[in-house]
Length: 138
Image (spheres, rainbow, N blue to C red):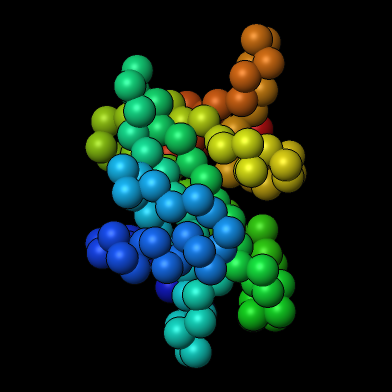
């Protein structure tokens, strides 16, 4: 099983970001995914709640996430549940719009799985209220 949990300790967040190749930002919050049986870290979703009611999400797996993933979970599946946990937090905190980081946009399929879509202005975003009410379709 995969366990997703918030990272409360900033030193732990710094280490987690290093494992996943994300630049650590102490002003950001984070969730991590671990293999529940081995305790191995699989993924980090670091995010911020920005001005204008937008959250910005960055969700990256460790370099060997594919090797660590259980047979029933794919790399993108693990990134999806971890990213969605962060997006749910954003929504519950009153930030109902989210934007993906440039790193997420390197994998357009993952961005769409998470619920992001490109608007008419070319900017990728997600309406979190609609996403969690089952109305959003990428």
